[in-house]
Image (tube, rainbow, N blue to C red; front, side, top):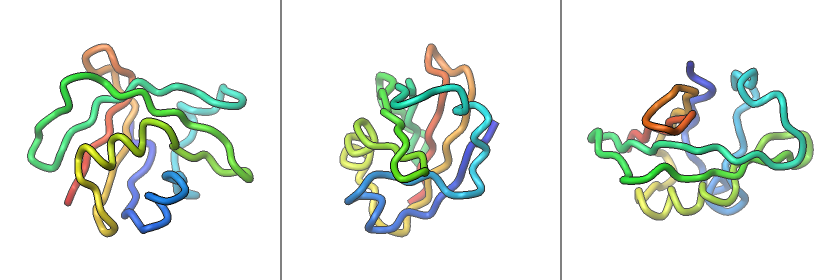
Length: 103
C-alpha cells in the first residue's frame, strides 16, 4: 500500500523528509513521539541495500518527518533535489516498509 510519493527539494536534505499533506497515514497513525520504521530501500535500477534501514519518523510542528535513517539513505543512494521517492507499507523480507527511488 502506497503511503506517499514525493519529489525531493533541498529542504528534504536539510530538515528531514516531511511527509506530503496527502500521504496515506493510516499505517502510521498509532504512535506518539518517534517510531522506528524498518525499511527496504530500492534504487531506480532495482538494486537494494543489503540490510533494512531503520528510519525514525517523528512529529514536528504537526507534520510527520523522517530524520535519522533518512539522511543515511539519501547519502548512500546519492539522492538529490528533483529525485522522486515512494514509500510503501508491505511485508518485504522482514521489513514492514519499502522506499523506492527514481532519479
